[in-house]
Length: 208
Image (cartoon, rainbow, N blue to C red; front, side, top):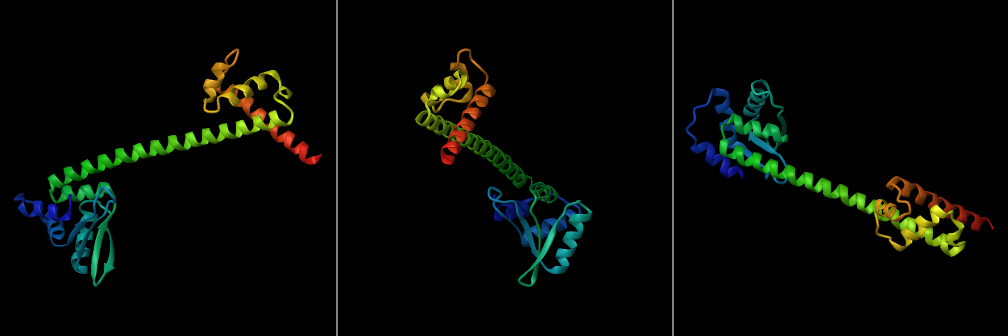
């Protein structure tokens, strides 16, 4: 969907419109431009100041939209940036085919954005989990090399050895390998204790 196609639809349409709708329609035919909705939502009319003021009055008072205006090269540009209000413009000027294409694009864009949001969220969680596992393994290795894993209590040593042998396992999966099995939060609690013990040993070594 582009501006030329919309103008063609408007010019070819034989529908009768009321005075206000017809004025908005003529403004678009004579000076309307819409950006690619896949990238951004932006519809503007480049008009004389008098015509622009009349358009703003009609859109604001008759159709309850919120157009804005700027000056550009001696003319006035009236624009809208909200997807819902741009869709309303299509309804006002009875550009039904263009409206359907615009709404389809909006739906597809919304789906893509939601997928990207979820992927980004899951990627961030995976990165966070991987970093936590790396720090846990480093702490366990430090304890092993400095004082030995037997320095830990039996429950902590059991978790430490399983984490060391299975760096990519989730906390839930580690919990299932313990005897008896424990919950994800239980595993996390033990690993946090191990990391604190490693930090305490490092401080003690530095103070010696």
